[in-house]
Length: 355
Image 1: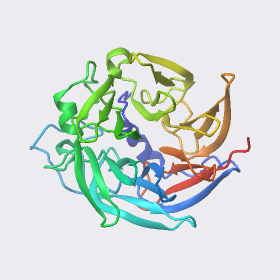
Image 2: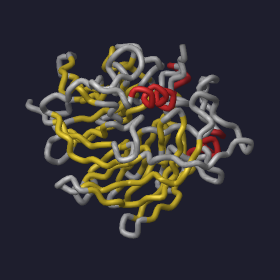
Image 3: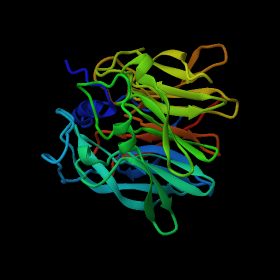
Image 4: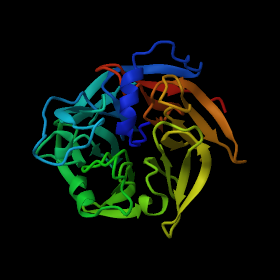
């Protein structure tokens, strides 16, 4: 059986099962807020109080076969285009494009483009994960772009492709390797940005001048566990997807101490793709598919880690969720139907929390 393990590998299964019917029903506290998105990923509220959503786009037909090292089948070779975007969502659910024409690539039946966004003050930054020669787009790189929302333009800020190629991790996965990486989460802390890369297994820092440095090589101590979600709450936390096919209870949420040692905080989770904290500093964990086997529609869920160490189920029935954040209204906002669906099928759902 195929044990390739990045989210791009999971995309193969998502493409096969997205057309199935008979999904588990969304729990009663989940409401569809926004429709018409293209592979929604990371999402954040901006200083204007509105929700901003990263979208993976729809890929394209450009190919770099014969020009550079390709990602091996069944995920590669990728084809690419400039179809990714960032959208702004108004309170009534209406969508407005902030910037479009950003790199997007398709491999294994799913597209990736803008993976996440972050604000430093009023400045918007986009994490690009669908670019690079290995993603079918010659002359581009995965990295951070600074977005001018007023003009709808984006300019390069940090080159992540070159950094990871020049600074290989200790234990890359030889049969599941992405030369340009598949960056997933972006977090702003002070005047710096931080990102996690699942395929190589690392957390990196980007300073105010766009210089990149490594915070920790996760692969060095933990091998190929596929870290995805990154969050900061009095310290760093990250979750992992782990290997595909999915094995229930094989993922964890980890913390990084001041000496950069990694510790398990919440064990026995499954396919973690999001972490968020409420005003009471309780941790919420988003699981893409909580069942053993291939990713399954309707098996996504949110659980809360309680002060006594137990888990409370908050929402169920989610279909391939990819990220979440708390809104100023106290609701959780979740990117929904984020993989394996056609253009325009992506959603944002809200989750109400009773206690």
